Amino acid sequence: MGDDAEWDRRFAGQLVELVERARVRLGGEGNELAGRVAAHLGCGIDDALAVSRSYPGFEHVNVHRGVAAYLAEHDPGAEWFGVSGLHAGMHDLVEMLEAAARTGQFDVGAVSYAAVATGPDSSQDAVQLGVVRTRSPGGEPVVLGVRGPIEMFGPDSGCQLRVLARDGATAAETRAALEERVRAHDAFVGQVLQLDVTEHRGNELVSFLPRPVLRAEDVVLPAGVLDAIEDHVVRPGVDAERLRAAGQHLKRGVLLHGPPGTGKTHTVRYLLGRLTDHTVVVLSGRALTKLLPAAVSLARRSQPAVVVVEDVDLVAEDRAVAPGPNPWLFELLNRIDGVDGDADVTFLLTTNRVDVVERALVERPGRVDLAVEIPPPDADCRRRLLRLYAAATDLDLPDDSAEGCALLARTEGVTASFVRELVRRAVLARLPGTGPGDRVRLTGADLLAALDVLQAQALTRSVLGAGRRPGPVLRADDDCCDP
Image (cartoon, rainbow, N blue to C red; front, side):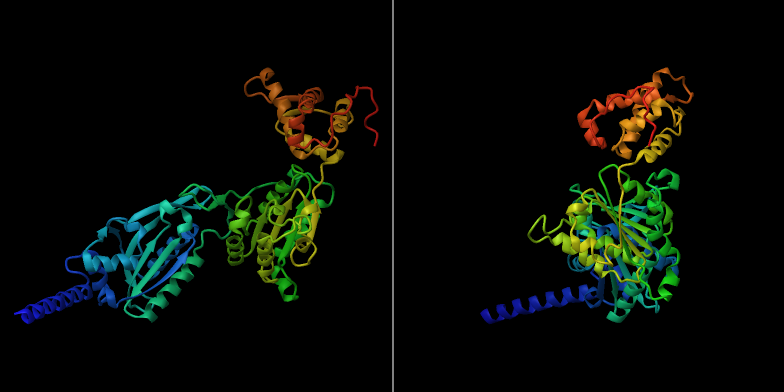
């Protein structure tokens, strides 16, 4: 009797296992999710082969665009469906399909979408979690699954693309075709991008910025400085093919250095406006230590491109100044060296402290080919800056006037930022006496009064870049215009 009971238990167990395996192979009894996938592939879930491709979370927009382009080409009528179930958005597609077939934990649900940016002022809905039945480039049935970054884990959780097919060759062929279209429909190409990191969950690591539009007259530098920078940065891109044919490298590095507020970032903005067909990747702050590899990789694939590294001294401090290992410095050097010489990639670096920048960065050709000082504006530049920032006012300030001479003398050593704030303060003071819709009228006396206020505030002088303490107030009859 005991032997019979034991035999019954073993037989029942084997029968249950057989039924379970058959149910899984058939796609799950009564489970629509597993059934749809199994019916389309023509095999059970356990017999399907899956391949995947993972992307950084900020690539979600490009994954969606690539998959959409593939479907438009190979199966325009294909329809997405979603997955429902507890924490469905946090699981791998294959895991959910297997669970659907075995236990019915997941089933067909609504497709979930997330809004993703496609430009500074544009966005679209991208599939956050969805499945679509379609065909491989060779016409074989395949199933695609997309899962965007998991919100509670932020963009670092990544974006996943899955391909299921009856055999590995079909799955790999489809994945390769999808990858080609992800790159062909890259939303980042030709855009200005800011890479940043944040502690807030759900924030994007990549932001689209409007491309600056500046005239050469808006960049006030000593004679010849802007021409030299522009010739080094812009011209090689214009003559790229001829340079390559002559066996010359395209990659270039430019270091702009000078005190804060003298116009380094302003000069970079002008260059970005000139390079209208370039992809631009801007790095600063904490992003320097975390996203440099992603920035350089993005630039390399999106040529012609520019990588802007602001305040490079934060990661490239001279080892003689700060002894000890600096992994961020070596990362920067390796990434710059890793870009081929014939790649049309420009590295624009800025620093307020050129004296502490690592010599291996600035003294080796192929890393930085041009270092340019952006100094505090001289007298001629200060005169041009006053007129530039007061262009929307009626400025009454002849160059040879006593007030004009006094302004130039008392602002010696200040930065462009200081001059801009000086004009703003003078305009602000004149607004109460200006009628609605009327242009503000500024005189030398107005600017001198604003200068008195600024130079009386020690902290403000320091922040805005006043180069010296206030000088003597010059009288109208002082001979201040002599060189």
